[in-house]
Picture 1 (cartoon, helix red, strand yellow):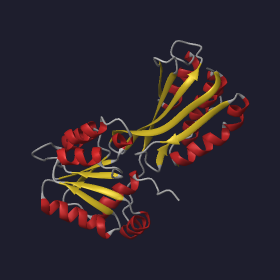
Picture 2 (tube, one colour; picture 1 turned 90 degrees about the horizontal axis):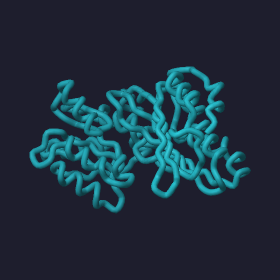
Picture 3 (tube, rainbow, N blue to C red; picture 1 turned 60 degrees about the vertical axis):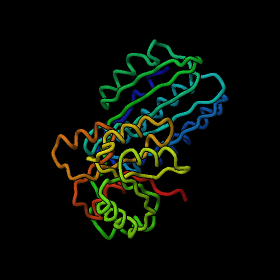
Picture 4 (spheres, rainbow, N blue to C red; picture 1 turned 120 degrees about the horizontal axis):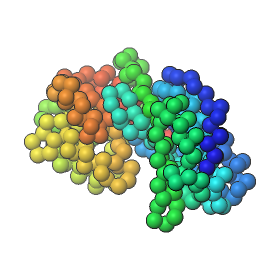
Length: 292
């Protein structure tokens, strides 16, 4: 695969960008190349990817385009799939992942030449891995650092956002009072809210619902199954349910508690007593707009 495509990758930093828009532009920019080689390139954004990120937007776009173009240039006629997703990597930061799967040739054992890898690491601190599947296809994973935007704090703006968007949420807490308070705040903002009284019930609700909730507000300290364990269990599910945004809502305010929640796979962290603006600000960072 051709690392020279990256030779003129830009190096600006700190730009806001939307993964959905980036995916659409990627699909458009590679259409002619893909059609010319008899390839169908399907580009999409996975559930749980924040609607906005902050980072080196031009270089991220260049790398994603290079990944797609290099695969297309070295693929036989057929289908390639490229998906963007985001993995929590710490407070206010994520790893933006571009994962490309299909049948294409590689010129080096890791799928990319050394110059390509060197430019990735030097330009963005990105990491690349390429694996060969049992059926002979290849899976390239490009991980790139990005940050979440600051939470919006304007209560009126957040309320307008919530009422125009709506959606289904799951509130998990072993305290009936806390469930009632959080669910009430969210319901008044326009969300449809279901509740679970512990981690085990939350896992069951996510696993068995015909249509899973769009986000989970998760208490941490619960007697039957704590929030970290419930989150880790949900993250091991084998479909889009594994990527549902999970936001800790907890009385545990120590730094080690935050670290433990994020390490378990939670996306964000709020401390009790929680205000409606706090809840909506966290949700607004993680929930993509409703389809038109």
